[in-house]
Structure formats: structure tokens, C-alpha cells
Image 1 (cartoon, rainbow, N blue to C red):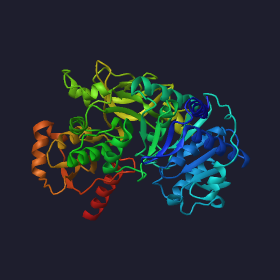
Image 2 (cartoon, rainbow, N blue to C red; image 1 turned 135 degrees about the horizontal axis):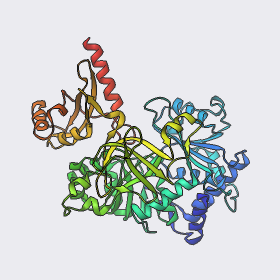
Image 3 (cartoon, rainbow, N blue to C red; image 1 turned 180 degrees about the vertical axis):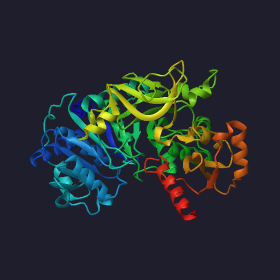
Image 4 (cartoon, one colour; image 1 turned 135 degrees about the vertical axis):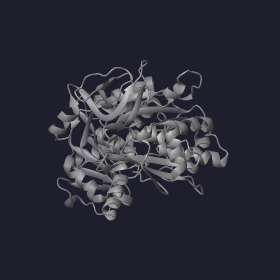
Length: 512
């Protein structure tokens, strides 16, 4: 199934329905959207793009992103979405590694990228230039190139925190299963709904386009092109029935803005949160301020958006005798996958024990692009080893601990940073916290907490130490507390613990 067929069907059913919006302004109906994508598909074919060829997208959030994406699929090609926050040299490396023949770019990020300087690239098309308008004016193709469920459709490059990024190969079948499981496990979508792209469209937020194309809902890119809490709070009441994907840090900022402005998230239907730990205190406050509008999902690039889900009911429930434990979890396995907790040898662990989370099902990637060794290390006997540590309770709820690489081993004991972070976040003056391990000659590693206070608030490390001693074992408490204004994050809102470890390394070298 080619996803462009979904767009054509919706355009045939509701041609005049609003499809693409910039802020509160409609810029394309579904008939316009489909015609533009079909024209781009023809233009790509005329430039020599064939089925299976890779076409990169390196641009900031904009409605043209969706037109281009579906144009790529009309031609039967493979979309290679690239994080707009990357340096042009990093983006060029991905284009070359993926063998992309064409690249759609926006002028605000493309910089020095030129077709002649990227190996294999034959065309660089700016969506801000007249040439893009010419492509959209091409006579459209009547139907998209046929694609099967096994055909590669989406080649997403991981963040590359442990080396060069790896290309995650997602097939039409993978993404179809992800799309349909959304309706079962996450949320409904109606034609009057609107999906707001405040998070990067090159990542999970962009993948949520499928559900809304299928149902003929509106696709809205805010005027800012990204996440601005005040803008969202003002725009949502105008749009109504707004759904959006947000990282936990975005939710935190949205809640803070709503509180300061006396707002309650009017116009927002659903916020799907993921991409990092949502601390218990934060989600409790989010529901109190904005209402029962939250759903949590857990996934990763290798199994996007579709490992587990914590339903709206579970997030809002305060009556179950274990509601806090459930709210601290990432929910239960989604319908299209199986989830297990295993030891390092792959043996399934008893309920309640901590091990690595593995997943198997129709949303698991085909493998890594031209990297059989990494594929073999990550997918074993059909199971995807996520690298995340967690445990499953008797009812099937999965609670994340940390990435396996983030676990701290001090004096032979395992310490999970999130457990310490949850405690520190209960201090009223603490806004954000991240816990990492620092190499230590005696203990192997010791716990260090980076703490960001609320604006104009003071935090006393002795108070934090007393708080930890009152709630967790002594060996888990931080050895040091480092006060910072903000924690380093990527454009998706994830805290960059690698950067915090580097700070400790630099500090250690200076102290020697």
C-alpha cells in the first residue's frame, strides 16, 4: 500500500475540506494537497527518480513538508527525513550515506549544501525557491507508483550519540501497522480534528500525519514553525479539537504557561507525550491544569510510536489503588507488538524484576541501512533489543528505568537515575534535574545530580541531600549537586546526558 493512495481517497471523499494550515489560515484543501503532491511526484520522475530511490528532506516545519513527503511517495521513492537542527555538514553526510539522489531543503537550514558537493546527489530543491512552485504546477499523475508492504518508505537516521547515525529502515507495512494501532491504542481522529506540528516533523510528530490524512483532518503548522507555549494556548481555542505530539519538556513549558496566564488548555483535544521520562509530579500537575487530555506512548526510531501506550483513562485516573504506579509507567504493549523484560542472555524475567525491554511485532524496523552488524546486534531472533531498562507488573504495565547505558553502577550496586530524579523533583524549588554517573577510582561511579531551580528560586544542596535520604537508600543519593540555569537538550526536548558527562570529564581534568 502506497500512502499516497490514502491521500487520494480522502481528497476524493472530501475535496473541499481544509487540509493544510499555517496558523489559523487554510492554505490548501485536500484536493489542493493531493494535486500538489501528485505533481511533485511527476516532477521527481521526470528528473530521473525511480521507485526505491532515496529523496532527503532537510527543512524546518512547514506545510510544504507534507506536500513534498507525499510527492516522494507518489513517485514510489523513499523519504529520508533529516533533523533540521543538524549542521549542514551532518545533513550532507546523511544524504550521502543514504544514497539520496534528490534533496528538498529550506533556505533557513540548508546553508552550504549543494548538489555537486554531496556524493550521489543530483538535485537540491529549495521549497522557498520558484523551482518548487514549478514542480507543484506540473500536470499531476493519476495514481501513485504501486508499493507493497515490504517496500522501504521511511529511512530515519538515529541521533548518533554513540558514533555516526544509523539509518532505520521502515517499510510501508511497518508504518501502516503503526498508523492503525493509533486508533486502537492511542486516540480517535475525526474529520473536524486538527494535528498541530509543534515538534519536529522529521521525527515522531511527522509520523502522526498518517492518521489525520486517513480521516481527513486538518494539518496545522504554527506561524512560529515550532513549539511556543503561548502561541499554542492562543491558537488552540481558534482551531478547536487540536491534537499534538510533545516531549515531556514541552508539556512542562505548556503547563507553566497555562498556569501563568490562567488558562486550561482550551481547544486542545489530545496531547500525546513521549521522547523522554515524564516525571510523576509533572504529569499529575499537567492533568490538574489542562485536564484529562493526555496519552503517553513509548517507542523509538526502530519501532516508532508503537511499543506501549498509557491511555487517557489511565493518565487521568485517581481512583485505582495503584494509580500512581500506573501513571509512572509507560502503559501496556500496543496491539501490534509483544513486549518482554529479559536478562542479558535474553531469558524472560519474572514480573517486577528489572531487565532490558525487548519488542517484537509488525512495527519493528526492517533493519539498519547497509549495516548488517548493527542490525544483528539489535534484532535477535526477531526481537528488537531497545537498550532501555524497565520492569513489567502483573497487569502488564511497563515502567521505564533508564537507558541501559545510563544506569550507574556504584560499588557493585545498580542505580537507576530516574528513581533519584523523581525524588529531587518533589522539591518545590526544583524545575529540572538530570542524574548521571561520574567515574570514580574507588566506587567505579558515583552519582551526580544536575539541578535547575525555578526562576528566582534558591536550592540548597543540603536540603536536596536530606530529601533523598528520607526517600531512597543512602547509596543512591548524589555525591554532588551541580546547580545550572538549564539542562542541555536536543531539538526534541530530550536532556543530553552525554553533554553532562562531558562537563564532568572536563571538570575532572581541570581538577587534576
